[in-house]
Image (cartoon, rainbow, N blue to C red; front, side):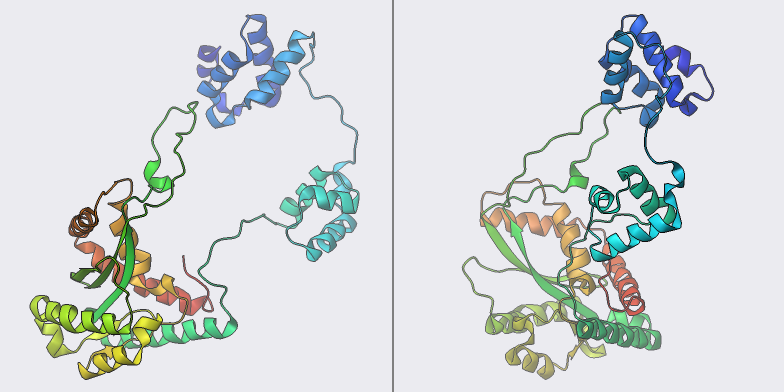
Amino acid sequence: MAGIIESSPAHQNFSRYDIRVIIKFSVILGKDASCIHKDLVTVLRENAPSIQTVRKWVKAVSEGRDDMEDEPRPGRPVTACGDANISKVLVSLSADRRKTCEEISTETSMSRTFVFRILTNKLNKKKKFSKWVPHLLTDEQKESRVNFSRNFLRRFQTEQNDFLGRIITGDETWVYSWDPETKRQSAEWRDFDEPRPEKVRRKQGALKVMHMIFFDMNGVILRWPVPIGTTINAQYYKKVLQDKLRPAIRKKRPGLLESGILFHHDNAPVHTARAVTDVLAGYKWELLEHPRYSPDLAPCDFHLFPKMKEHLRGQRFETEEDIIQATKVAIKNLDKCSYVTAFKDWLQRIEKCANNGGCYVE
């Protein structure tokens, strides 16, 4: 059967009637539903009917059905999609946008098919799933994000790459002894009729090490693993800035100390404490503002940490030292262009934020 269909130049344009005739012909040849479905998938690929549909028609043919046309169906004609019924659907939907077609059908006394047709064809509606966001932003918080974005863009337009080149940004992140792969990482090429690969849902490992990482457009300046059991408070963060970050800048980016550092981190309480801001002011490092609840505008969160952890997911580490060394290697393996890309993406995200009213940027 497959060979006959494949010889046709328009094999993907088979109608439902054509497919049913093929099923009938295959049943006469003695083939079962699974075999017929496999043949149809091989030839028609995504246009093939489901195995349930094939089984239904195999059963019908086996029970003596000859006519492969659809049987006449009772119900409302297509004209049920008139203005009056469209208004009914709109009224029902305005009360609760989460209603199902079945619920609207019950309220309006229309079939589910026509409710769906009105929603999609007449009202151009599409049911969309909610997306996870870090925080439900208030109007004031959105305005703050817009103001930050506009100020950032205004300064970039004035100073161009000299502005971005002076920025050092940083944050903290946990690195676990085990972090499962993402769905995208576990995807694999398979035959069309093969089942999806399976993986067991696992939690992150219990052992973890906090890393403090600071970088600029040229790469990582400081990667500092926090000893297990250490509390990261304002005093500890201040000590890292004084004893670790500043010497690292002097060693790796001596020119920045003369040209003037623009320092960026989010507004976590540890970062905004008086002890920390006093140190930054004493160093004459200009502190760039960061709007609240905005990880989508923090280069560490939307770029560096996800990229770094791609190299770590799916690996199991037994000790704290194993985690530290693996993190070091993961950072070392990042493309040098990745840091420039992070800042370019940051600029694009800020521009989108300024133009979308302060909503989150994907």
